[in-house]
Length: 154
Image 1 (spheres, rainbow, N blue to C red):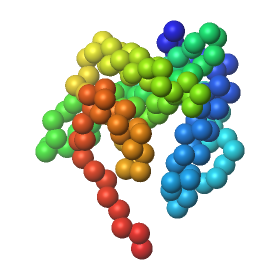
Image 2: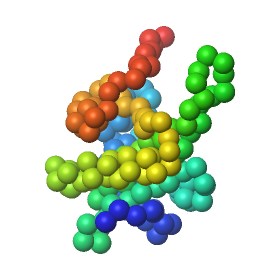
Image 3: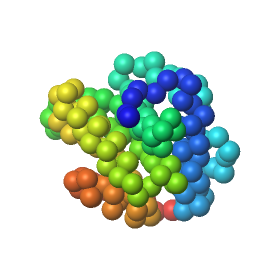
Image 4: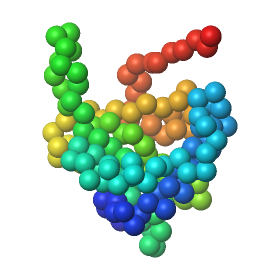
């Protein structure tokens, strides 16, 4: 079952966020802080209350096994870009013990259906280059690379 998150879902979602954060911290300690609770409660409650954000959770046997935070974004109003609106996936993750059962694909398809109903032109997200598992997943559901953000450390 996939539904909109409630305030009561915070701890379950935070547990999954913590798992994903640890992967990011291990790969990029130059970017991420080693913190116990990477999901801020105030942020969570604000997102639930906002009109252009949604938090979806997937429950299996009364346990939250996956979540996604998405927002509807209108592209910057500059002359060189077409004025489009799209869904941006801030977060999408499946609990480590629930991976491999297809839950991520079901949640992603739910997001696509939601996007179609809201009449946006695309669904977009960012993914770290080190996260090969996530990249493979996104490619398996039909996503392709739109652009790259590159860096050089000084």
